[in-house]
Length: 204
Image (tube, rainbow, N blue to C red):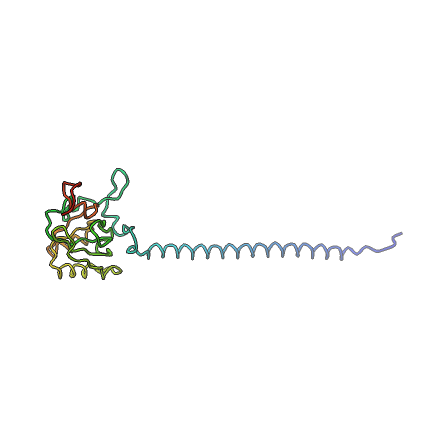
């Protein structure tokens, strides 16, 4: 009646093989996806660490943005501009330095129209002023270092008793006070401060 016997065992084995093959594919894909996720997580972790280190190691002495270490000592005015916190007791906010016969100023440039450097003791230049004129230009040898003591020693060697700065940092104020140096701060360019209350008058 039947021309061919049906081998049910062979069909079952083929079905089992197909199921196992499919199962292995699913397991392989799952493991591959897990490995990829682990690799991505490691890459993100390494990248975040590099970014964090870059921010922490940012050289604040290389530009105008010397505010990271000082931000706790500064306030924001109504225009969201960073201004010195005038509640600090030692340094005096000034708009006129004509009463200062001789003083040192941390400057961006070596000319009278220079702005006072936001880098404070790490400014590019230290100008020694006398009677509204530049007596001496010092290219700051400690610009790339965090060495406030050496800067104070340099000022002392020049017999400086008055110092004009941009931001009254507490550590700088303390050092100046300890060494009997009067401290003044301003955001104005040096030549404007030398004009006093007569901003349209020429410097003589």
